[in-house]
Length: 212
Image (cartoon, rainbow, N blue to C red; front, side, top):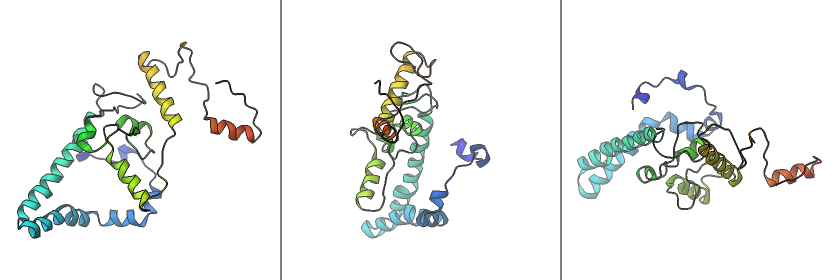
């Protein structure tokens, strides 16, 4: 947790969050975060334990303070472990230190597919396979069904598969080449497009030939 205690915004660089700041719910949450935490994170379990079985102290200590403590330990432990080069697998990219560790998803409800998250940060999912443990993915889908969220961003299967195949080839060659085919020819400078994009550009007058 040292990195959090020594947090300096200027060393992290600026991030464009104008879309978030245009959301009135987000602004309200940011403004009232401390009140929400005290009432919801500590007050609610204390209230339930008091009126449910007359044990407000147990609700405050176990469902309040200890729950928050252990949750933070899991979050920071997972974050540190999933950025250790010696642990896990770099499935989609080795351009950053993140790795995938499936068993971590059991501890933190889905963050184990960390390499995917850092390779495709705009995608709302962490686990793209149906069997991946990813509670946040299913919750977001539920909110969409209830009309509380809309248009979840996803990366196309084409982009995911291309990144996966590229990284597999880099792993076979010790990460010394950007992108090679099976004949070891360097293909890093060649453009690649999806079939839908090919059709769209061809229909608007661009002269293209499909090789593969």
